[in-house]
Length: 215
Image 1 (cartoon, helix red, strand yellow):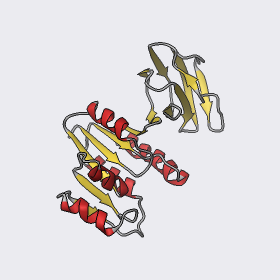
Image 2 (tube, one colour):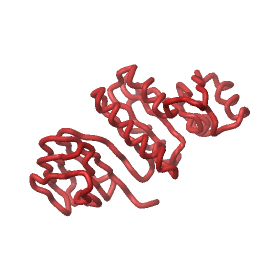
Image 3 (cartoon, helix red, strand yellow):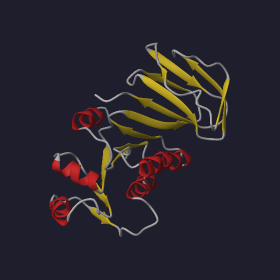
């Protein structure tokens, strides 16, 4: 399995999601999480598994998911993991090349923040993971990366207490061997001004947030 795409109940856009799917691996597996599964079915999109307590949809919509023949794993609402964490645990167990969480950012900050922290689980499993919605792409890095300007804004937030040797190439506000620590906003709202940029670091884990304003 090359890529697992987890579709949650946060910010989504059908046109954006279809573009994302066109760029994904053909050997992909799509998990719909709770209301995300309903959205996939109603949109006529690929869905290979539905996971959740399904407290966000009614029985009729849950029946429509099952009637389509989608394998469904149903959990009690009173549980120790969020539906998205359960989906990620399932995905990591399959050891895919990559995991994408789509619609993991929304109006509930607690759920959004928890989904960002799920990146750590994937990071510790050495499986790249991104949280994406129409306005943001979020990932963790502990090694240099190159990037292109799909999103106009790039922010860097230290995920470990300290990240050293941060050097930015191709950005409006370059850094050279900088240290980012918890409680600092030095890395917020930079812009990539070259066709390609590069983020280098020596030690630590950075949260890289690429953003755009609303369409």
